[in-house]
Image 1 (tube, helix red, strand yellow):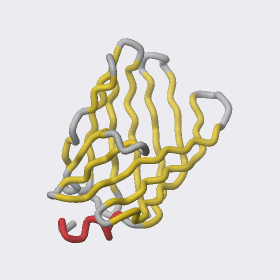
Image 2: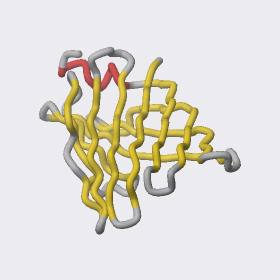
Image 3: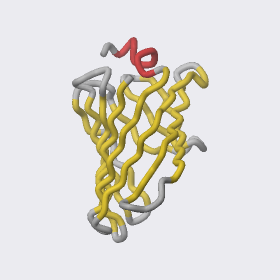
Length: 140
């Protein structure tokens, strides 16, 4: 994926499958849904995630999540919907994104674009009350 084509390559509808492995609660969860990336402003896209989430044998729930993706300088800066910083990554190969401390919790992400246009994000989250891995697969 060429850096000059990054925005256009991500734009549009993606199918999302996520597996969450919660080591602290000793259970797994899944999310099946979609992600839409649409232009908000020059160099900025809205990331909108919607799907069906189930943790263990619990009820299926509707889940949504929104971020802002800011493109520039070879990076994608991911921000929360309110504009506050979350993390950043280089959209190529298999790369670690920047870490995100959140109180006593620590979020680490690794993106893998080697099978583009299929890609994944793997989050490892640790803290006093958290110990899980979230594996998200995206495809057209």
